[in-house]
Image (tube, rainbow, N blue to C red; front, side, top):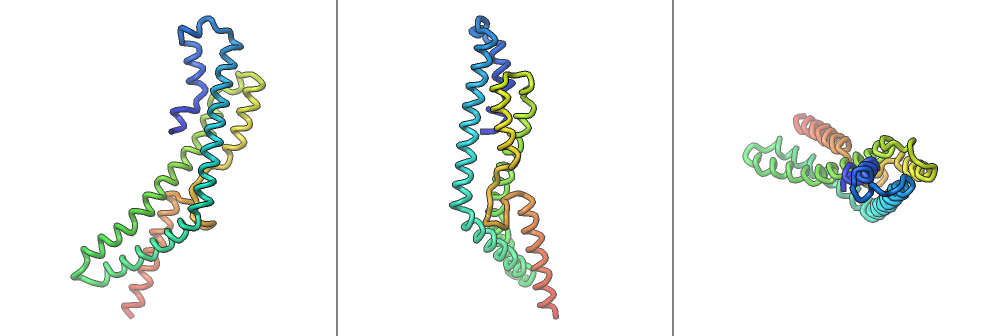
Length: 185
């Protein structure tokens, strides 16, 4: 679920105002309805954070090993690609396959971070300052939690993001040039 699909309280406010069944509702009833919807969003957000924490606790060590071995595989395959003329196509596929899986993990990790940041922006942009005191307390709680983006981690060293993938490819290239210089001597 994308943040823009569900967290906007403005959407609920608009539905509350536009809906023909809500024409007879008082302002207080509409506020309660919006507040209930916000509570549902908060519970859903907390469940997502809890799920991401569990995934990180379970998969973080596995992801670290995965990233290290993928980096080594990309480096060695790149070295083999540069070394042998007759088997270039085979080693090119090896480099690409070694790079695809970390790239996919980093893409999804980057999307998770972006959506987590979007929660903070959505909360800030929802006209919370025009709402009730109870609503504002809930929004402050969400804002405080949304200060730290949720991310997919690989050990304590990597956060799965496109920046991490770029760092990995830079390291692979550095190791490749080092191995090539050693071979040329």
